[in-house]
Image 1 (tube, helix red, strand yellow):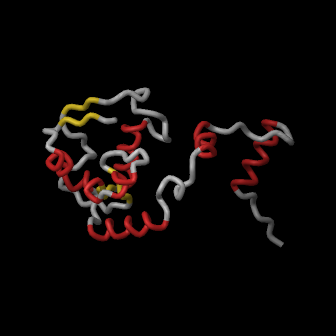
Image 2 (tube, rainbow, N blue to C red):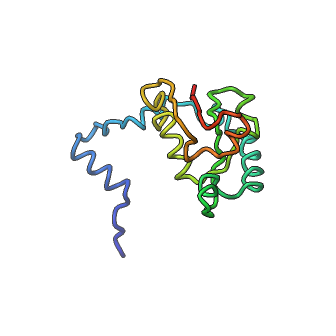
Image 3 (cartoon, rainbow, N blue to C red):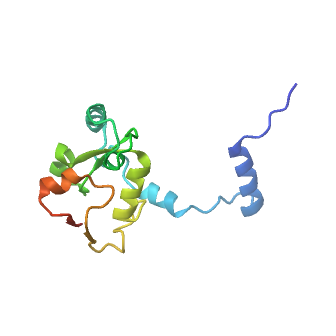
Length: 154
């Protein structure tokens, strides 16, 4: 009978036992602690209704807005809120506040806006004053909001 090699989880558990003792668990990472304290996606507004709206938006706008502005063709996988809604249902559901992005572009935008993984503010929480359009914001956002290329977060 063939012997199966241990799975990743089994190898990790063995390494944790050797490092932290039989009964001790490995310490939680900052991200794990954040994820435990964070409401789930449905509680944050991303339930069934959002999933349907997301699919409709991606069907109508299948390409990443950031890459399109550079003349590149990359499939979008994420519907992004151009202006972070911060719990405001009107801003959350406003279709003019939605843009299609690929995951790398969305991750870069999110990390720039909130520091990534939900940390408050890109620079300690203060407002950011950025001259000129950000590479991840579509030009239609600035045209629609008549901001002349200057965006103040917050």
